[in-house]
Length: 297
Ligand code: SIN
Image 1 (tube, helix red, strand yellow):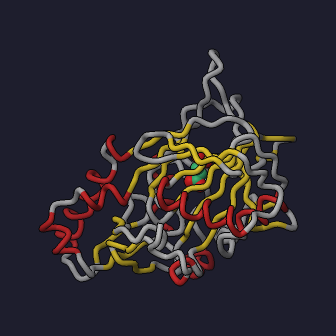
Image 2 (cartoon, helix red, strand yellow):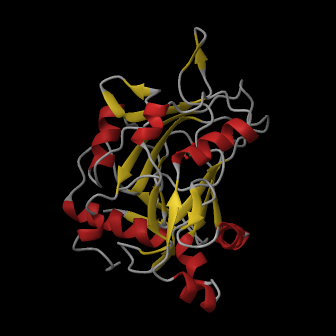
Image 3 (cartoon, protein in one colour):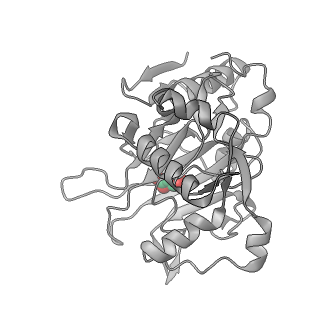
């Protein structure tokens, strides 16, 4: 029996009663999928997934992405990436600064992402034992609903450009990241793409505001100044506290979040000697828009 316990906040539920290292039954799979649309951020506590098991669970929900940056991928399982600030024998074990500002995974990709599945193996803590390196999420189904009617009408049918390089360069310019600039070959593999500003969520059928400060660069067809003004409004609107939920990590958590209906931000509030180690898989939305559950949650 699986038990879904909502946080009572704007996002989030804990799912008890599943061992994710074992294959999901069809019934459990459907419950998890519906819960993903309804609650946006699902916590599966007390899990222990090696890269193969992690990949098998995440892969049930769609094809898995192999990150364009091509680094810190687990040998034999390139779909599994390590996010970590740990260093062993002078070598970093993972990407140390992934996701450290508001963004939506894979909005820069032609096929967008359905979900991110992140497994916490080591969590930094402060001197009182409180977890650091929390992850924040913002609910884009709620943010869409509250938009002014005139703006909903104005942007209905509009598309926007998303560019992988926007976040990458922001990290180098504003956050002191040591990541090298993307090579020409990497940029060619991830050219800018265009997506509707409003999407129908494939699980809930609700409208979603699909724009994010990390990757969205331009509303198509508008003069630059007008596009900048609207994007600035949308970015401020979508990050109001009332849409934001913060997940406090515990070792063993598997967190699965909806990348269509949520933005997220990894808070970088820990020191190099406070160690964080996460395993990540990105699930593509490659069949969800055609699934019989689409729009039925
Ligand atoms: C991510 O954006 O994929 C990483 C989030 C996190 O590490 O908390």
